[in-house]
Length: 429
Image 1: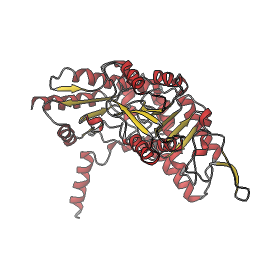
Image 2 (image 1 turned 120 degrees about the horizontal axis):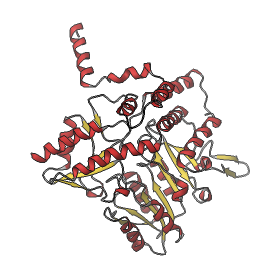
Image 3 (image 1 turned 30 degrees about the vertical axis):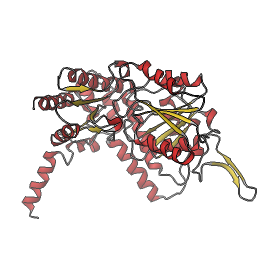
Image 4 (image 1 turned 135 degrees about the horizontal axis):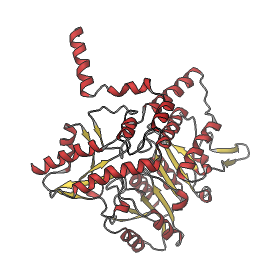
């Protein structure tokens, strides 16, 4: 390629946003400098969220509205992972630093309000779900209640267990008009054989927050376990596991927690550690064993669900992601996310051709809003927005055939205005 053509192509890529112009933040501002500057700006000031946005490599002309699928990590997270990977290659060691490992767990225990001994690090929420669904002592005929709006990460492990061991899956469609309707439907499905309620804390379909505390209390009174799939909650909003009183909870680090891909967290209530049988084990799962004596003693904590050589760099990156979130404040992030989502929701209601599928009750709406259009199919809406560099997610779960829009800390009012303008244009077509 000639030099002029090369320079021309580089100019095009930069202008188009394929080479992120925000890269200056990577070298010009350290994490400490970012926190210092952030502390001097009021969250109500637009500069506050512009500063936050500047820490991410998302191109300026690209509107990313699919954090519910995959979050972007700030530069400091990528840097931390790279530094730790480089250190591991300079001084290879097959063992991860247990003391640092527990330090990260302690941070997440404070963030989720639980004990660090109840936390296991896993590869993603899917792995956490599989550990519990396959490890619980369920037998042929035992019943599990779930919604028709669960993610494939929940549906497949449950179907797999049903095919293998004969457990019975009973479903209900979430009530988005009246939260009490969800409790009533669960009660109707309950029998003496019901052992587990498996529901999303926030559904991947409509962004509906199910009444977690009420479901857990209802189940506890009847001696039924509750597993909350938390893939769509931590990082988007405050989470309080002690307050919910659920038995199991799992989340991914790569969505709202803005952490490295292939990181996740599993919570198992300490009283149930011995109830869930670890099916995949290895080094670090045990507190001692003897082949000669046929003895195996598991770790007294959720560490029993961890095994083998780890990639500690990823979880150091997850730690940095949590530090980033804490520097801003999860309550502040939740307020920001909700404000954007509510603005979008209210404006959608004014467009006659739009049907909003997210809950009518504001208390159970989150930072994800789902809609469909009467005059256009969901796939055409997604394609139209993609052509204009707006990334959303099609929703086929629950046969909704709709479009989901996620708002997070790197989004702003202009993002809301731009997607609304495009939806209005489609409504006129």
